Image: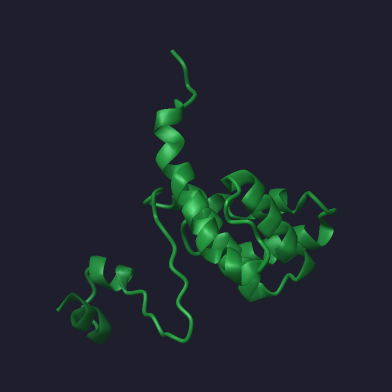
Length: 141
């Protein structure tokens, strides 16, 4: 019995990762070649963020890679990893930093959309958990 996944099992997740990376690429590296495959594109974006490791840039890349929202400690860990990374090794710091969020992601085919000049509210928890405070009732109704 084989414990490795067939390419058919991982293809949707890999395709979604590539789409998320292409969605955030213009915000992380204006010159990024979005025609690259997911691996080289991730390496290029990680290197761009290594050179300018602002928390918002780290968070955006981590969100795209993990398919979920990274925690504050993950962003800090990624920043430390990027500071210690040599040129060409930044991708490892990003992948290591988002491992927990990526493994907890519930929808591996999740896409990313970057909104500029807009406000969003993430009400998923409020909508799916039984609490009876004001905001939870408003969200569910």
